[in-house]
Image 1 (cartoon, one colour):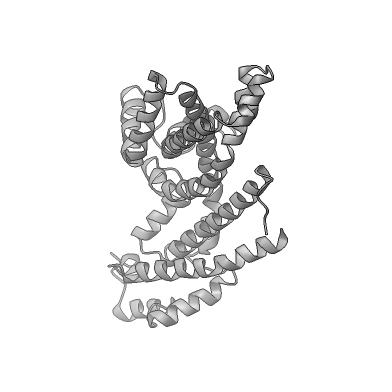
Image 2: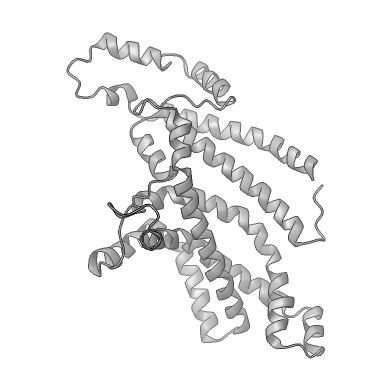
Length: 319
């Protein structure tokens, strides 16, 4: 097990290097000058001062040299200081990580709690109205853009009926431990973020449940006189859940990447929103820190997926 984990982490190094290189080039070659944005409107900013600031940040060096300097520091956990906030970029990202993880965790729970039962119900009612509704739901909501659906929810529940807050994670003036207020703020963004996963899990569970309920061991369980509920829950659904673990890594990846859009729509103070603002402000250190920390989370999520799959299915050996 230990050798497997070490080997997977070693394999992840080239992936992270590739991600960092692509992100670095895109951010540097995109139009705009962070120094000009930073000094915009300053009547005392002289050309020589601007050049001195650019030199102090290392932005006057050739791109290969800039990347090598950044990579050597990043290997030690130093992503540089934010151009706009004058604080370590990693600290700014890590300070917002709990907010993003909170949103992603709730979204993942919604995916499992809603998507898995929908798939089982559709399989047990194959060809009936319930099955048709679930199948249509799965196709439609995997195709609907999450940001569009989020805006619709804001218009309906926040603007028209005024029953849900439209932004933030806590009402101004409320105590940070006001759980009901936090729940009201997280319901809409978490549901929108989970929507694609709910549809995907429903489709996977429907397919797997239909395949499992025709297996010999399920028919044997029925022949023993077990209750239908026990047969479905213990013998059918339990085995149908095994392939779901394979999709877990992809779902977590979708949660992390999709959070950038959803956090921006609902003004959720997480990594996604802050990284987006940093991209607009050409704050290179923060952009690189946000992308790399998110990439490390994805690598860890795929590693956990493989380990969980080995624990769920004893036939699979981690080697």
